[in-house]
Length: 150
Image (tube, rainbow, N blue to C red; front, top):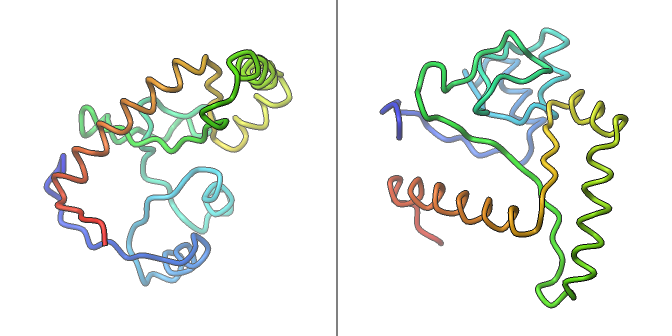
């Protein structure tokens, strides 16, 4: 969308099968998460070209971001922890406190960095705002691409 590059999406049933085809030369490029690709990169089986995050990763500091070539480009996979919508606020606050404490633990932070992940502690309200921004961003991509539900 941002570069007018014409690429064919090849769906795979799993990332291992995609990596197998990349290593064998049956596909030329793939977008993957750092945790599932770092082993192939470290083993020299695949060559990382860039990261899709807004900033370079501590794990791969010499690897440029796509945004360095395509200003404004950012695609970041993320995980969040949610509770049912009727969870009492005091329970949600207690869970949030414990999760944030865990994410600031040096051992957990070190493991996250080793996997190429960035912990983002915050409040439930901040997470909700993040989800709204992500939804708007991806809605524009879906509209541009003409993607329809089957």
